[in-house]
Amino acid sequence: MTCPACFSADDVSYQRLPDQQVAYYCARKHEDGKPREWVRPLDAMTGSWSAAEGVTDELLEPILSCVSPEDPLLEFGVVEYRFRKRYPDLFRAHVAERGHVLVGWTQTTASAVRFGVALGRLARAGDLAYVYGPATGAWSYNGQVAYWSRPPAQGRSMLSWEQFCAAEGRPAEWTDEDRRAASGS
Image (tube, rainbow, N blue to C red; front, side, top):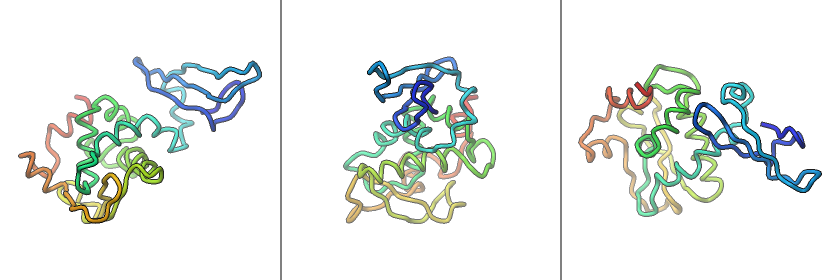
């Protein structure tokens, strides 16, 4: 999203609001020396959200909070599950916009182009570390996935999705509850 005052996207951040609205903020100092704020309907902007990092801004802190400093390396599915449980509305909003294998197969799912991008940004910022390992359970169709932790990754054990599910007493495959949580029905 570009600022209507300075036509720059570099300093624009946004926050999802109720009722399908999005509040934008441009931190750049404009001619009057002040930043700009404006609100637009969510559907008016969807087509122009091709910059993945702008779309994932609101995911950074919530996803980071799903990986504790004392955690082992967590298979991607564990991180996403925690995110879905802790931030159900935010999770469903991104799934509604990009899809998920839980609600139907698509090439570019929220897991890949939203949640994965946010995890990658956190790794580049030094907030998370990762290694690749086997994808398990419902995620096994991927072959291998990233396992995430707070830095450093070296010396940490790995917790797979299957191990996590066994400890939680739930199946490692998708359940009807998982599908309802993704679709909001």
